[in-house]
Image (cartoon, rainbow over all chains, first blue to last red; front, side):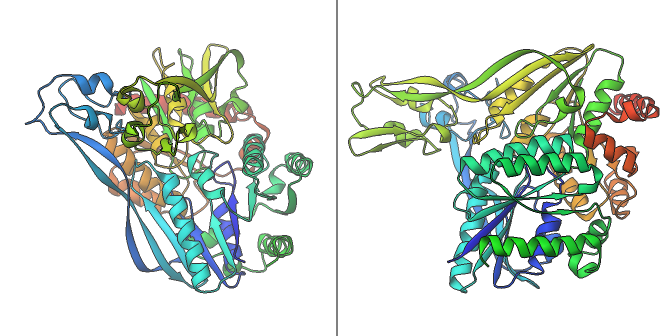
Length: 289
Length: 276
């Protein structure tokens, strides 16, 4: 059966993508998915060779056809998003895409066409196939694009008989994160030892529990605050989250990123690389790969 | 004046800049934390919370005695949040965008609205600084209405908004209508890549912007070249300093640990004022 490990963090910038790409250089028979579709960074390390490019269409935006509009005001009365100006122009940023104006306009003066709000790609990389995407700037439906990326990842895994999907998740706990958790075999939470890291980790632990996905946790940059590291680990154990390791603060991560490499490719003897290897072994035991 | 602090990439230092800027100013100022999925500003500001409000959004409720299963509600709904299945009509509240279309379209007036909780909003103070943030309920996907509720508290001479990471709808809801966007980045390939996306969003909204480069000595020099090319002013550079990172980890404000930064943040506001 195909297993999917999703790496999330709650707080941004804890090192999800760096840790996850290090895993990619050790894993075999795997598909990589970048589910952080509105600030996707994994491709900067994977340098994927794009084999297929697809438009992502989802949702619609209203547009008033001024020649047909009689300025009756019904659309302005019905719109709950203040998206239609006094001179009957739709603000595409404010428009929620609900289509109420389009449906009720007595003159059929509201156009409501499908949006192309991003692209998704099937690529090959030195570590295996990659499914990634780019949500258009300021676009909605990031959750749907995340689901699509994961669905394509699963399809590829089944087609090529690969047993693991490694998914780089988005920050936060909202729509795209929820979309990246459903049906996953397990999540790895990459936490950082700070008051914000603690706060945000508690919320993602709750979220994983809410969606019944078994969680594991590692602390990155643990030596910046050893007390907070212990606090995070204690909290995790109390919530039945498996603590799989600690990674020291190590500028080697940044140096590797600048060179477009994973930390294992750049300097596999560094302290951080050593810890990442141990964490990967533990994860392997836990999820059975 | 409204200044939104955004970044594209997470963890670049938005909250550090927002909170330290807010406490350094001696004038009347408001700090709104719009990162409702993972709000962190309060951990550094430590405000006295004076008011807690539940934030809800209207969602449909169907009176089955009046419903004739005509299906018009399902037809108008763009979000598949209400559907007729067999002999019953099912609303899916978590998918609902609260547009009110189903209520309006129902010929039998069988649909009314009820409130669904999205999260809470908390207001308070730290001395003269007014603080507001939202906290999305864990498991809830819909953050923009909560962000709008936080922003509805905007008032007075100066409002600082701590925005969420990314470039999609929650970020736009936190930047739209601001007078200035201060972008916080780090000089790494990830930082630069996501900064470019954030600049794209800011430009689309037509808002002037400037840059803070955090951990300015860890990475490469490409962000400076990009800023020059794009004509984006660099307003502050914060070098990596283990003392800063450790203070942050404990929840201490930079200006408390290294008071010499207070003047720099005051200067940052003056520079922003010149650019508007």
